[in-house]
Image (cartoon, rainbow, N blue to C red; front, top):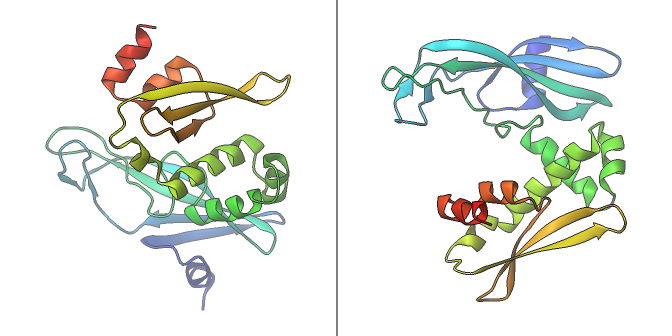
Length: 208
């Protein structure tokens, strides 16, 4: 078994072809591409096959032998033949605009259950703020938050300090009709809140 075949079996990632591996004392960088040669246009749903541009996306994966593993994924941007938009292919093992894989997120989240953000970040080699955002994303997925907004008619918005003397606030959203907590947000500015809701809510916040 050659080196690329070894790492392919070890990673076990779907729709990925490895093209090179660079190993140092502290890191393993694995160059790879996606095997699917097409993507769907998010605007019109047409299959796109013409590559418009390429970029490299660096994604953190689980450690191997105490070395930080980074996937250097060659990501293609396509041009839609129908509407002219330029969609970028999505990774099946990582969310859009995230710098880590799904399994890395689950691994870090497991640490957070016992330790604060800063300590988890020191253990896994990630910034504490990145760990915080990761944990919030995992919590939203686990709690199926979108379902809590279904049928919502009256919403209470309140703020609460979670660190005395530091001016750090979280925003609490409560369903007034049921008295249940809908969501907890790490921000309280109305410009951020307006992005969370549809246009009607955006107009409401803009008028305040």
